Length: 225
Image (cartoon, rainbow, N blue to C red; front, side):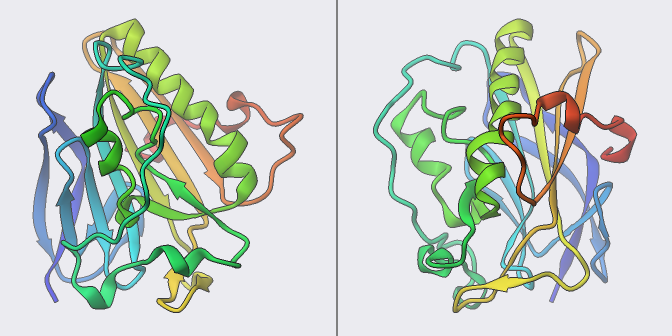
């Protein structure tokens, strides 16, 4: 099985959905935020997924957000989740894997950041963009970073967003397809022109929604990049 080592740097063409990654061949998986190994790079046109066959889940997702598109339509009706057919069948995750697990089907590239067109919104309902998230993370805490990325896109006209999914050496698994449960999530939001860069980390654990805040999760960006 060929694997790829994903550089920490991503290059985006402003106004385009194309995201180019620096790739080099790698013989083994390296489990750290700054050196991410993938079995397949999935280009969803609006964002890109680095996907791991063994984990049956994403290791990272990257995309650009443009101010002209944020809050353009705010489509209210959400799409149905669907299996990602570009992944070999043996390594796919399915909607049913989450049923009764206690974990939410958590978006990495969020629906609210891509609800400016029906096609873009549908793209984020690929199961390759979904990971098991604690309900408190998915429904309350992580949403703060999604709101921030849209706010900063409007402030700076465009931002680059990178999400890195952290897994333990022996992750818990759920469902018939044995989907690995992440231990945590990193997010970086940046704009090089304005020298803006903020980074966050969330453990995949329950939080007190009354006391938790975005600032509780800020980390130095060298931890991710």
